[in-house]
Image 1 (cartoon, helix red, strand yellow):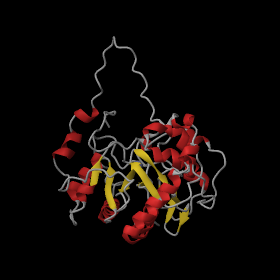
Image 2 (tube, rainbow, N blue to C red; image 1 turned 120 degrees about the vertical axis):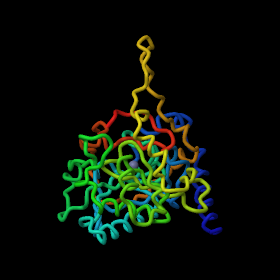
Image 3 (tube, rainbow, N blue to C red; image 1 turned 90 degrees about the vertical axis):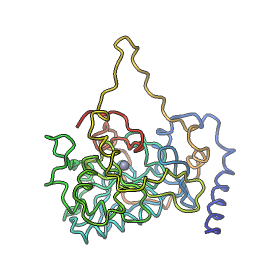
Image 4 (tube, rainbow, N blue to C red; image 1 turned 135 degrees about the vertical axis):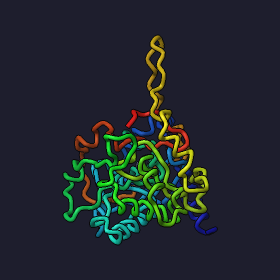
Length: 338
Ligand SMILES: [Zn+2]
């Protein structure tokens, strides 16, 4: 462990020594534009820097677009990058999915950008290479074409005719098993799902409930579930989140989602001036090593698959439901009542 830490520190210091060459103007631009424009990861030791919603990743690796039992989706977004342990976790889940009878495996949604960081659209987190979305749609028999991977619609697990209720024809017991299998992995710290899905698990899960507390209710997350890995041990640059509370989470914290409060519209003063758009996160708001990562030489060998040169329209489309930003589970903000 000590030698690993030393290697990581040496890697980071090596990167930091380049920092003098960054023009001062680079430090003050919206971080989502800067990180969204980079097409390849930096070279060097894979290292998450900062926190899940304010950070970046050095030396990220790619999930291949195709594996024996997974397919990566929405390839044009170029968001299938992450820490090696994230890729390993997806391969583990893909194997387990087949064993559970979850189609031919898993469809993998967004991971992180090549150097992590904030994104031009969707997701507040996914910045460290430790977050990944997995579709609630099993991998089909046939390989999907790149075009189909852009256009196949997301499927909600909810019965939209009811308030916060899963549709049992869609959210099956196999889907529940898939979520709980991911939650059982020691490297997985949290899984975000819609409150209706959390409630369904609370009410129906008869297996081991010791990992149910990792499954956290969040806005959105009815078409995919979001897996978050813990900061790797001994990596000081990765700022961990508070541990999940003890217990299965089938308590007051879940009941709150079934009140009006999370869905209430903020009260508006009709005489107030229109609200100013929120200030974007600037590069200077991130840990300063992230500016270094952004400007570090690219790992030119790190190419996942055939990537389109120009982003098709879907990459620039406005956020759909699926792209609900991932909020910290302690501080939700109001959304339209489902
Ligand atoms: Zn997510």
